[in-house]
Length: 112
Length: 115
Image (cartoon, chains in turn blue, brown):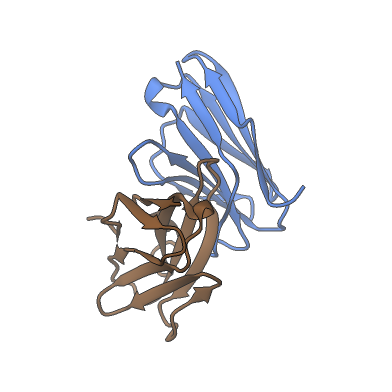
């Protein structure tokens, strides 16, 4: 596989569920990102990992919990989400923090 | 204040014609980068073109060119010879080198190419 992959592509969950989104990059990059894209809102940066350390956390509610076990993998753990958390969640990676970013196809999340 | 402004929520263009998508930005950083991304209905964001604040020439990548006017703080994307596959959302983004290196995205412009 090449580029940035994300699984699952679609996810429907209830407010009491716990689920995880997975992102994997095959580009040898050192930085990875989670973005949230809601309808009619600009893309919002959620978390940034550079060399496996979190370097940015943009006031994201604690019901979103990121994990970066190595430079190729990034997870977003979800628990007790709200319906307003329904959105497209995009993962991206870049060679270094600040370089052009390459995005995955996104996970379309629906919270019921 | 918004750092990236895209004033055209939607644009139409006839196939094979050129189209300009507007982007203005706001920064006090002297060193920054400007990016354009395309997002088809499939959801994936595709990098198109990059312009550095110190680049004297406008960036070009195939049918894409960036009309960079630094004094006006604008970085418009020009797509020449539009194709049906160009129909998508287009996002302008900025990275400020001395203010965290993170990307800030504009609200996007939806481009529809008509046959």
